[in-house]
Amino acid sequence: MTDTTLRLCHTGMDEQALKGFQACLSGLGTETWGLAEEAGADAAFIDMDSDLGPYLLAAHRLLYPLRPLIVTRRPAGYRPDPLTIELPKPLRPGALFAALGQARDLLPRQAAGGLADAAEGAADALDNIPDEMPFDALRSHPTFVPAAEPAGLLRRFEERLATLYVGSMPDVDLNDLDAREQIQYQPELFLQGLVARAVSHAREIALPVRIDDTEGPALYLDPRNGRVYSARSANALRALAQLPTRGTVRLAALDPRTPSVPAGLSARPLEDFEWELALWASRGRLPAGTDVDTPVRLGSWPNLNRLPLPPEAVRIAGLWSRGPLSLRDTVRQLGIPQRYVFAFYSACFALGHVDAPARRAPRSEASGPSTQAGQVVSGGMIRRIVGRLLGPRSDGLPPAAQA
Image (cartoon, rainbow, N blue to C red; front, side):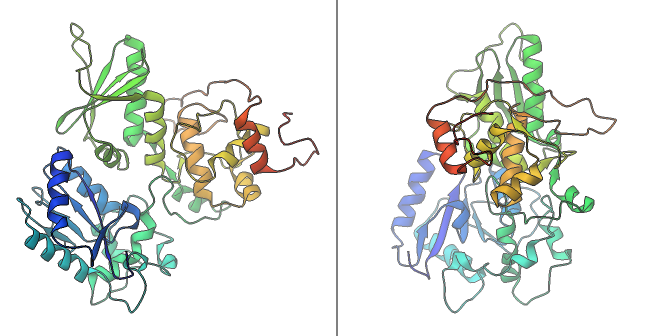
């Protein structure tokens, strides 16, 4: 790709639809456009005919409020949006070429540099944007300065919401109680919380349970074999998990006479799924009520070879395995952004890998889940890797030694 290439990502398409989309693109040449990963794209194409098209659109607009979006149709009740371009099916090369041109015209004009780098230098405007701010509310935000080009103005906010697992929240003053409120979220309001409650209920009744969304059955959870079965794509689940559910998903009981999970659904380990849900909901924040000065110790190791990891996860895990250390001191000792530590902690806490009281729950809430003690970390390849990353111990013992 060149500096003037329009970087395009896509979502919501099944295999057949993707083939048609790629065939349509192939007739346009590659001089002015190219496919890119979601985080580095200038524009996105969303197939609204998928079962969760509206969710994907809502989540993409929340994460990338200043990105031009090309959609196959606008969902019912969708508010007018100058950055959303409608491209009805069947897709034709000429119409797609025109839509790509419209998307390019919505991008801020610049003399040099790649289009995906247009938001560089705007970090100062991003510091105080709340994680759950709706797109429409951006126009009344104090950092919003009127400009003649709405797309260029909104693009200043892209980096703030662009990163998948850790977000882009800047570090805050941890001595400021108001600032500490900004780095917290309520897991129970997200899919993470609903799944945790569903798993607990399934264990009580010793049967699988189902979670429905507005389109019908979405997930089947079976703690008996430690598996989750999904009727939704990975992108659709991510869209569901990153936003507060607000009643869009609910726990549903299976018929006790036929409690089996339907055949043909994709399956994965339940533990992996709950870990990822916590990362998606957290995005570099902490469960509400977390004390950043309470010492944290890694009671059991998450499977770092299998799980998706936020940046610096191995160094954080190695530090906590040595002895208790607060979140504040973890950030200081490793010299890394707070969101890296907070995201890893949120996921570890969700699965009971850390020995620390994570939340001071409000009086109206039930007590939070207790942590589970695990095996003490012993030797092996992972220990040697951690030892090299952390360097010598302050007490003079070898990195692989355990106090």
